[in-house]
Image (tube, rainbow, N blue to C red; front, side):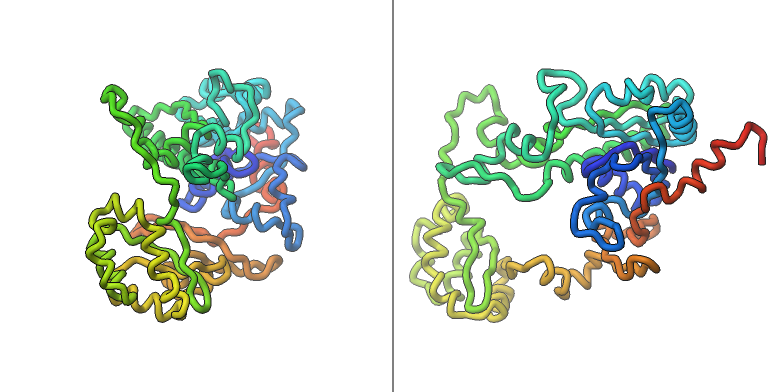
Length: 378
């Protein structure tokens, strides 16, 4: 399975990385400076850690897309590819001669995946779309800030990453359809606004699902108590107490059985509305306990809680090691390189996160040299 990857930044490269982990040959088409992620600090031996994490297992070629020879090479590679992946603004690939209609003529089996901010038509089609813009327009920032609070963005390129996963899923679905549709390819369009809203708003559609119901909007509590941290003597913990039976065990274990009969903790909705009160009730008791002692007590009572770790603490934790959340790769130039692992474990299907990201143009000789040979040579 060959993927011709003409993407940059995060949404496209992370999509093709999923395909690379699953065994595809992914060929990045680059030019000097075409992907600024190569220069995002920190760098080690000239390799960006961020670039490494979203481009492992791929090959890189450098092509001058302004030249006839360069464009001809891309067309030849597209003819032998199963997937063409791009995340340029609408119209850019068409102007270069790499639009879907141009490429499908010589490769009708091609799955053409186009990632964009707002789709290829519509009122926002020409707007640039970075992660924060998508977070802002899709309505989740006020929810993140809490009712009555200032809107807050998630401090991660989460819209890009969600879009990448959506695009990878869509690509695999299109491949499956091709296998059951006489080998015919198709164009797949994925836009960040739709991908992010489809993921983030699933649990925020309370007042927007039954459009014809005529129901009044559901009152929202200003509390985000269910996401509140509890301080321990040596750290912090986070968990969830939702069911009345959990609440009863929680209060009893922490020395407040007198609160068990409180009507505010009698139902799941009521517990959610009064989570701050619940935590205020036990805060001093928990603060006097070590994290280890508190978590042991919660495990004994079957109440879901965990330690609030730093990234380094998680990577060193028994759970991360046991679940193989990452894999260490020994590279002759870069030394030990740690990759976040592919998250599924297959009984028979291949999944490999051990190959490092490519240097710029590292595979020119392997991939481009044969394309320069005259027909019938070799």
